[in-house]
Image (cartoon, rainbow, N blue to C red; front, side):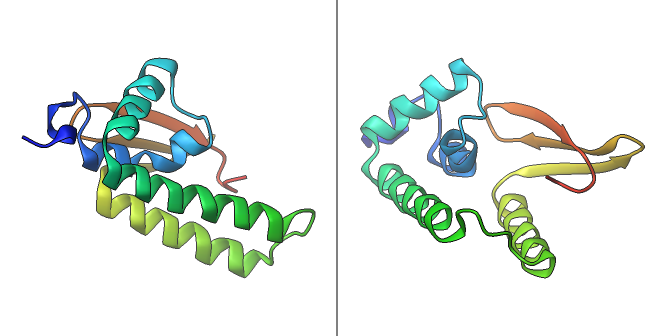
Length: 118
């Protein structure tokens, strides 16, 4: 059994939640579980490091600038497609905006945001 197989959180779950973790958008219990997994799983930690560098690069390069709406929509679509490939995601449009439910093997979270996505 490898080090990451002994955890309560699978590699698949951790990798599907990397951006939530980076943006500090998961609850304390889930954040602690992901952190424990990253501390012991070199493969996931490497992937996390790449995503962390991408986020820092985006922040540096886009600081103060507003991306054209076409680019923002392409990025949203690309991120949405990547998330859909890694988790079971349900998106429902409603009068108050979109409701998104994300389910992984060991957890589920629901998050809603306005239709503009900002």
